[in-house]
Image 1 (cartoon, rainbow, N blue to C red):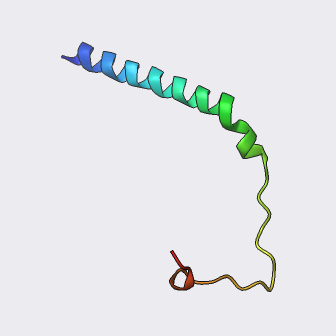
Image 2: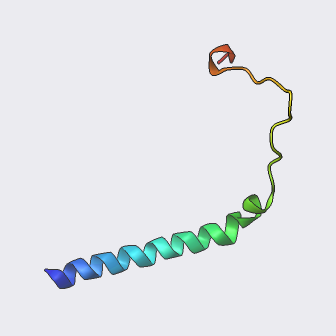
Image 3: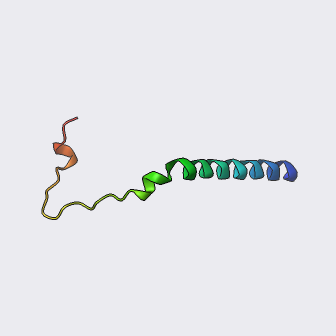
Length: 52
């Protein structure tokens, strides 16, 4: 029972690591782009005023 649980945990950990490596390899460019902060003095509409 414990050995089976350890195998499941190990498999999940390896899968998560593979997924993280994939994300890092393919999407790091997005993280390198910097988003400028909002402009000072500009008013933004509330959600209620945004038309769907």
